Image 1 (cartoon, rainbow, N blue to C red):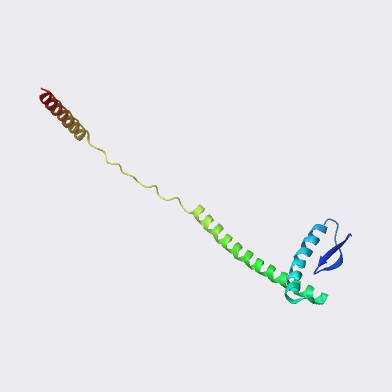
Image 2 (spheres, one colour):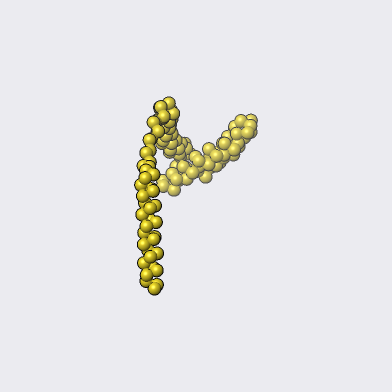
Length: 131
């Protein structure tokens, strides 16, 4: 079981941990040290036990806030999952029916005849104006 030296609030502590957990211990000690530093900056030098207690309580408060946020997010996620499941199990909506108007062939023929007449009239007017 390795012994690790950690620094919290400007003080060194020897702590034993399991093999391979040294990195986690240093990370946890760093968080605790950051809280202890805040206390030290605000209050000044504190007795060791009081400093560790206050820093631990500050971390516990942050942890509780994170846990509350996680529960809130998990609740929202469960609601979204339920909504997705409901949408997946709901019947497909009926397809929309689109109606496209069709121009009768007789109207198309009549318009073509009118266009041909208009072109003939335009051609005769051009001939008369050219002469």
